[in-house]
Length: 309
Image 1 (cartoon, helix red, strand yellow):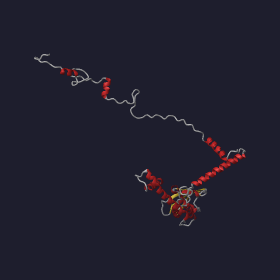
Image 2 (cartoon, rainbow, N blue to C red):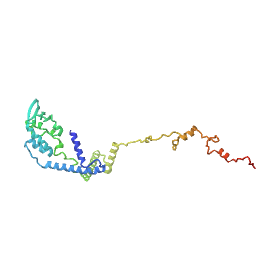
Image 3 (tube, one colour):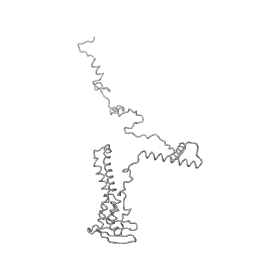
Image 4 (cartoon, one colour):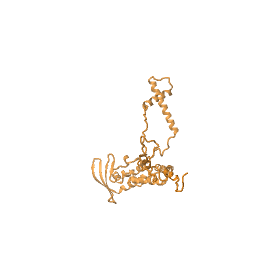
């Protein structure tokens, strides 16, 4: 249930500035605006939690302690649980040293009945309602047992840091980041201190030479770098030849070889039926291109009354 609520909360957050047609470039540009607004809202809530006092409904030390440590929103939830704890009846079930087991039941709702186990020496307690495991705040049932056992402050192990006023303190997102100049000055000071300690150690060992301090530090850094980072030898071989797609070529075929047609294959193997001339009976030509017929047609014929000269 908790995971589903968080997922729906994240979805509602993104739905306010992106949709199914938003490109990646538009997402980067639009993401900063709602993120800045959320950060500003958290800063405003942190300011109100730290500098505005809470209205106490009971006036007990437990309520006052919760107002000191919790944020405004979490304190309101804790205050509701603390007020409701006054309407419960406590029945002791068992006792083992400092460990107690109580049955806590409401005076108005019979369904609101749970077992509470508590160790007074360490002030560690558990309840069957599991409100602390679910939301991170003490339930009304444990608070009812704390009231009869004179526990006037919230134990530290029941205070989660993310619900306190100091949750965002020291967080880089909400605090001012150190400038580049400050980091540069700190780094320079650290280097000077390192050189100074190096010179003092060499002077104590009577090994201080006439070299400038900068050369001494440079040699020391080079030796340290060579010892910590030995040269890495890489043997780079030829890349693997990938098998490309397409028709595989035979050993004797050239790169310009192509698929032959059925006619070419038949002519190459001599299986195609040869063309026959119906006029002379020869092969390789037809009646129209027959040369024998052409010669016989061009030869003149003589009649009975004509005589060849």
